[in-house]
Length: 315
Image (tube, one colour):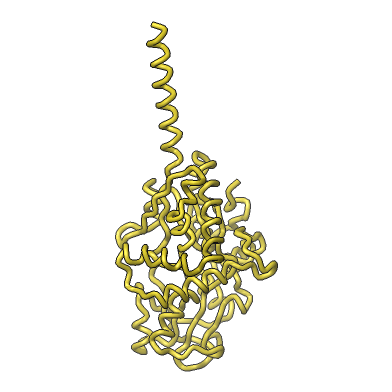
């Protein structure tokens, strides 16, 4: 009986250990297809930073039928990247999210005009924007500046702009901006409006979890945040090695891109991570930028009520 009791105790301990280990496995879904925008997470995975932190991470990209948010809500993924304004909209709509890591310290949104004129000086023009969102700041700016843009939704292509079907297009400074450049579009200070330079510098990408999930997996979430931060710092110090890892993920997921495009994207994403005041990579959500986002989105009725910094930040 003594030996039987010891065996049962050992099995119970192993069972408990297995439960703990299972809680340390996380599924992370970036909000878009494989690209340099997510380089730090790929680096953390490939160089074993997550394993060093004591967690097992699986990176699963969204599909055309299953977005990152859908995966998060269904429990298939525990973490995703979301832009601050979009996260605030979700919270306002009753989806309690918390930020566990902020990577973007600057806004990368731009408007590019076809006719060489400043987009902010043209009322009523047709402006292309993503069908999946990410344009809250642009919508707020349009209302605040009384521009009365005609918004034209597109999926993933810049072809409407190239074909002359629209007058201007929203672009990310690390993505569509360089696609336009590679297609021969002339990009000047006159026809390119950078939101961050005109009082709309609101942070973008951060890592978010459902609040309930964070409470259950707080330690694992914190380990993920620290290992991911380590991955991004490694990217900044070893950009060529990071680019090789990005290209591995790009090929793995059959993404139509090229090395030059991904190199430019990585360089710009790393620039956007530099805090505009301190000049450092701070990896933190700034209360002042949360307030700016609130002011803009409440004024444009994109939020029904204020979403506070205390609501968003994981503690």
